[in-house]
Image 1: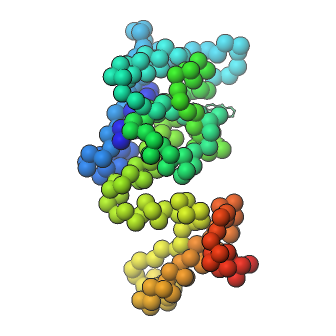
Image 2: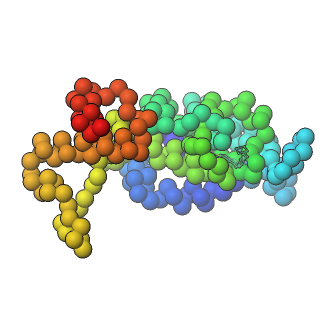
Image 3: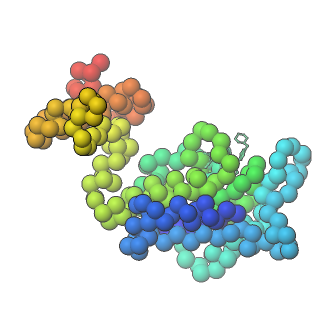
Length: 238
Ligand SMILES: N#Cc1c(-c2ccc3ccn(Cc4ccc(CN5CCOCC5)cc4)c3c2)n[nH]c1N
């Protein structure tokens, strides 16, 4: 899968993609990330990318021309790609949308604005407008990284442990169970006995109960379409 990122801060993207899961996926050749500086698509000596908003108002707005020139440059190879604009006004990004992007797109262009946003006319050239959540960021770069990271985790072979992607809790519709590792006793804080028992059936049941308990407490909105068994466990917790 190929990601192409349009931004005035390429270093934000370049720094992050070298590490962790993404770094491994890049080294394996499972993923390719190319970052483009929008300032390279300007036509003035000052590489201007923003201007005052028509109609007045606070802040600056990013001009359409650099976005248009960059998008036309990418489209010159006539290869299919999904163009995604990051924006506070976008549709909510969820694990389901990450799955959809992974399944449907061989290449994605992630368009990152700054300032108070970008000229509305850029939207004529994009396929999706996406927001990663109900809070205001300073630009689209962090959102682009969230999308890249969550989509790459879903690519078969990217994690090197097929189970992790399948086990990601948002795929199952409830939160994760608690995790523990050595030491067994840290300043009197002990690992639950069941996890030391070696009884995999008991451990699985304990983990399911804990996951449902966490979900009921923190994200009851996720508790939909539970299996009869999960519903039975949930009722015991109430
Ligand atoms: N994805 C994503 C994002 C973004 C995001 C994405 C892209 C850009 C480009 C510029 N900015 C900054 C910016 C700040 C303030 C404002 C004003 N409005 C904000 C909402 O209330 C009304 C007034 C606009 C834009 C961006 C922010 N924020 N939150 C998400 N989940």
